[in-house]
Every structure is written in C-alpha cells, then in structure tokens.
Image (cartoon, rainbow, N blue to C red; front, side, top):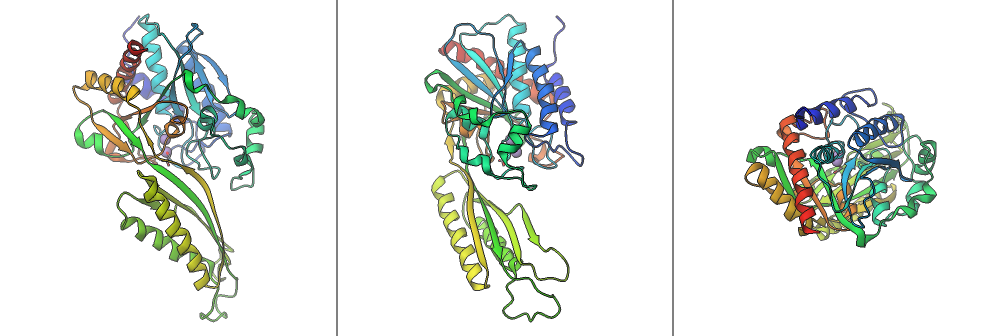
Length: 410
Ligand code: GLV
Ligand code: MN
Ligand code: MN
C-alpha cells in the first residue's frame, strides 16, 4: 500500500467538509439542519473507510464503532460536527476526523486492540442554535436533562421539534447512557484556539483541565415611545438598561483574575431609529477555571442586572440557561497521551483549556483527556482559523501511539 500522508489526508477531508455550510463567510453548520445531515453522510464515509460500523443515536450523535471483539471496555474519542456562525474549518470537526485516521492507520498496520473504540461526532457543542449544548455527550454520561427539549431557537422551533424533523426520537435519549465501569475514558483532539503552542513552537499539547462555563438569558422590559416627544427624564428605555449591564460585565471580568465574561448576543425591539426600545434581550456568558470564581461573578451580574432595572424603571426576566462545571483531565489517559506526544515531538506542553468541549460532559462518564493541535495566531471562532497539515499529521501519529500505549495498560 502506498504510504499515506496522514496530515495531507486530514487537510483534504477538512477542506471538503468545510464546504458544507450555510452561505456567508467561514463555516456555519448548526445542529439538526440540512448541513448537519450532509456532514454526517461524509463523516459516515470516513468511518466506514476506517472499518468502523456506524449508527446515528437518538441524540443525533453519529457513532463509528470497531467491530465486536468480545472486549468489555470501550475507549471513546470524538468531538462536535457543529460550528459557530462564521466559524472556522477545524473547531470540533478536527476532533472527529483525526481519530478516525488514527484507527485507519492502526488497522492498515494490522494492529488489533484489547478494547472497543467508538468515535463520536456530536451534534451540538457550540450552543449557537439553541440556548443549551452538549446534549449528545451528556446523554452518554447520564447527565442529560429532558427539560432542554422545550428550549427554542430564534425561529421558535424547539429542540424536540428540530430533532424529530431530523428523524430522531428524543424520548429514547435517556437510554443512551453508557456503563461507567466499561468506559476506559474519552479523548478529544481539538484545535487549541489560543496561541500557546505557536509561542512554544510545538504542534501538539496535552490539556490539564477544562474551564467551567455558564450562560444567562436576560431581558429588560421598558416602555416604548416617540424619540422626539418623550422627555428624557423618566424614560423606561430597555436598551439603556442593557448597555449598563454590558459595561458592568466587561469591567467585572477585566478586574477579576481568571474570569472571562461576554455579552455575545443582543436583540432589541422595536429596533427602529425613532422609537425608545421597549425590550432588550441579551446573553451573558461567564467562564473560569475555578467554579467558585464563576459562581461569585454570576451572582454579582444577576444582582447588578436587577439593580439597573430598578434604577431605570424597567422589569427584568433573568434565566440561567446552561452551566457546565470545570473538569480536570485524568492521569490514566493523560500519561499515555503525554508519552505519545513526547515520542512524536521530543517534549510536551501541558496547558489548560479556556474553551469548553464535549470532553467536559464526558468526564462524568469516566476518565477524560484532551490533546490540542497548534492554531495559527491563536485565531478561532473566525473564518481565518487554521491548523497546518503537518501538525495534524503529528496528531494522527501521536493518537495512534496513545491508543497503543493505552492498550499496554489494560
Ligand atoms: C465552545 O466551543 C466554546 O468554548 O464556546
Ligand atoms: Mn469546539
Ligand atoms: Mn467552538
């Protein structure tokens, strides 16, 4: 068989799947859409090419499994198929493509494993279409909450409805929970989304822990009126309330070590040039490596939002829509992974993740680890996101060695 350039093959596959996107700059591929279905058809082909058996589970996760060998333990690997709006071609999908190639490499070398491997292409990690995320990984870990099915997207379509239109039966999601005792663990490969590996001149790194995150949905309700005739005093302008909260959130994070806080979405009504806004809806997202820092910030932001509403004659609706605690990576996977990266590069870099990942939910199933791949200039959630083919080639080699190292320990 001709020698395969694994990095080149990864780059070709990621370029091809990046074309499956809504129109506009970069990649926009949201869960339970036409683009999602088209992407799964391509991923299923990659999985079959690596000799995996495939099925789509009730949460919309495409699963590629090694053929049954009688082994009771399973190693899980994978990441998400979805993107943000106008995102890049690597976030998430790289973590689906590369472990498939690592399995293809091992099987092309005639290697057999003493455990099963499942590659998972999760539907919805970003939480961009619906105000929640990680349904697929939480289902496997047994932390899925069926109440999320009622949450709606911007067009008023609920998750339940979107899943059914996609051909899924969400009432079966609770049955997806895997046995904790049979899970060797979950390994996620991901583009770093930051500059540390580039600064260290390394193609790969080993993650130590994933930050915690929570998201709030806030609506200020005021009173609309004529922009020219309504006196400035005692206006009940919902957007003025929102703007004060946006500044508070930004200042709080600027002055709190390790806290990231962002207002990323804002909708106002009636949203015309000559009316006072009577409604302003915004999202607030907080992240920190320490859950106590995040909890304290969340309380301050909620208190401040209520105080602003009082001060400006507004009423407020305030909901926490999503939270995922910080998670530590497990030694049982991190050690064979670090050994594999060191064998490939001569050294490793241990680094934390400020982004969240399916791995943080999969940590509730069993041991969890992550490998990062160098990200050009640290740019991510942006059409310019880029990982070099040779770095992805290093990742495929390190992943295959990781799997072999792990096989020696079970
Ligand atoms: C997800 O990728 C996030 O960190 O927002
Ligand atoms: Mn991601
Ligand atoms: Mn992302």
